[in-house]
Image (cartoon, rainbow, N blue to C red; front, side):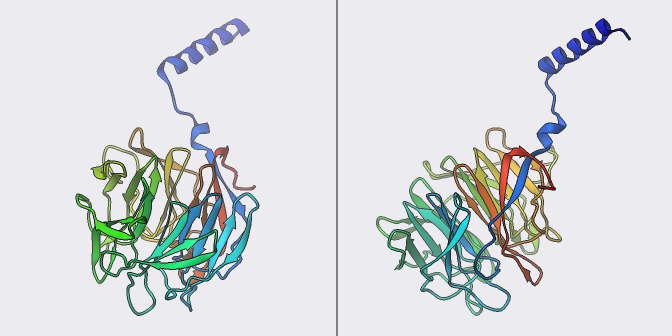
Amino acid sequence: MNLKKMIFKSTILCILIVLVGCSTDDDDDMGNWLESSSFDGYSRANSAAFVIGNKGYIVAGYDGDDYMYDLWEYDKDGDYWVQKADFPGVPRTAAVGFALNGKGYLGTGYDGDDELKDFWSYDPVSNSWIQKADFGGTARTGAIGFSVSDKGYIGTGYDGSELKDFWQYNDITNEWTQLLGFGGNKRKDATVFVINEKAYIGTGIQNGAYQNDFYEFDGISETWKRLKDLDDEDEDYVILLSNGVGFSLNGYGYITTGEASGITTNLWEYNPLTDTWEDRPSYEGTARQDAVAFSFSDRAFVLMGRSGSYYFDDNWEYRPDLESDLDD
């Protein structure tokens, strides 16, 4: 074939690609994990986490022997850890953490004997804790928590059986109010992430079965909307797991790690504009469950957790703008 014909065919192919559109392997290869400074405290799983400004905070958890109460601050810009004031409540695991109006909050969990419902606030300026009004629902473990539109929320979990109730916390009045309208199934050990004042809730387990329903909560209107199932028969994905982590970054949501008939490293990316999921390069740390995540405006980290009786202290940053490289 002469050069003119090759150029002509190449030009026609390029025009067709522009007109019709196509997906490339390059899109599938985008997203990379980079190991950051490992946690300075004891390895652990099922900690609570929250983010205030450019700092991430880890508190409580379980290391296989002891229930924890220490608080650690992670500086994402300097990539280092600083120990802060110990949590003064009962040491615990599987608690809920979220940030609200410049303060961190911790509540619920399990102390080795009982489920808990006490609720606490951490002030990073004074480096001190204050006990607040007890959580409005039953004492529980394995719940989820988040904040949207200047209110905090805790819901689902386990108090002897799986739960589906959601409660709103007003930090001005220090009061809890039960929400209405969540049509999802009961569950424990679910995941949640927040994008633009909307929380996205899914996964978890009920009666030994992984839950496939997926919901959006609008923090402004305080209404729920059911989205496509996590195993929609018309889509090419199945995201059924428990004890995973959710985080958001650059307008997308993510779910990774967890237990799905065995622990996993799969990473799934959610586009709220199309209500669809894409698989992305897997988490490069060891497969695990009961990890935690820090989600900042420009960076996200997944860290800690356990595999069986082995507990981790590593910390991995996810960069969606970088090409996948397992050797970096």
